[in-house]
Image (cartoon, rainbow, N blue to C red):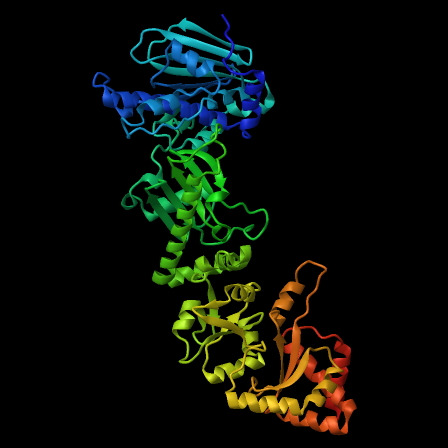
Length: 621
């Protein structure tokens, strides 16, 4: 006699089948997880009941495909079910025998990990099948039962014959071309490897094997029962048992990289949230890493069963280059196992993972700088981005991991190394900005800083100056761009003398300002041999102007530039003389000097034809 489900209605079953799971292939994950749970229950009983003489290696899960009759069969030799258990567990949607078992035994034994929590996964099989038959016999009982359902119309339970204990689930795959893939052996194997590779019991299938017949060219084909899953996860093994090759092969196979990883992070944490983690820092950035298409995240497992291929919540953006997985017994799952609730457990694991990655990078920097430099070449930009992203909220986490080129050391160094090697009495960190190290080396302002014996950071990445502005200071030392108005190495006496000299020439500079578009003109001591340079007033530097104006927006910005003239260069006297004798030539020289300063800074000039003509005219005299 057909019975009705003890649940709200057809609408609930439709919701589970069509809405809870976005990926049809996970039905097999659910079937295998249920089989594993059934074996776990019987194995648990064997540990507490001496009458049950069973060992862990006695258990198995088997998958068979009857392609001709469109059947997929999942069987196990677990605890099985009697009639009342069938009625309760499969007759009531969202009733979980596993959850009840967990509650009953939560304080008795800690050696069994039960995967299932909710009674919904079984019904996901209706996504791919139009009929489900369950033949089951509970361990220790004589009678077997046959449960059958075509979905919302209800189910039947009848007595039947079954020789051994355990459960056989037969799915009648829908007669739809889109479902044919679930009758292909290679596809089923792929799903098992993807989701259930680390189920602790062997998942077996009959696989065709081919070999040459002895003394013949004929190919013989035979079927052999083969274990598909790995069973023991690499990340749960003792580190001493795992070789570098083991780590490398796993990484290349799981993450489709042709190169071995640069660094491996294998960790286990216990406490409020327990988990195993196996993470990798790749040796190179993926081709799409700095694009919107790149998807960050770690694979997420619950007791060895993959529930999410890329969980983005486990990694902050600045560590998005990390690949790997996390396996935890403590995660709180929603009824589909497919999506996580945003709970404290996940947040706790994520914070622990973040600290672990940071600690590993700090150790790598300290113990093997050559390898760290390889890492930084590939992913340093992402760390720098992390400093100024989110309004600098993460700057303290990352400030000791970023590197800049040191003019003194001729290599990349940390800010900490800069401070440790600073000159006595130095209270600022000096830097210069340019497209390349060679171009920065030619900047007029650099010459004097070198002459004074100060180290100078060369910023060549477009993000660099934004990073330093976000940091503000490091160990109470502020950052100073040697092209900014705040850079001054003069003594108090020299500053006073220069201020008086600038005031005496105010009318000259006011006149020169009428010829060019600058915020100001003044004499300076920041140059050694060069006649002029551009400096900036305010927080927007010339370098930042170039970066922002290269972005694909219609809005353009302009730094407040100042034309600075070397007070000790002969050109300073020439300009003073021209102001008294030849204003026309003063205009020409002012424009020449201004355009020269812009070109040195890598900026375009407004009228290159005029500039060229003036150069030619000077050359012809």
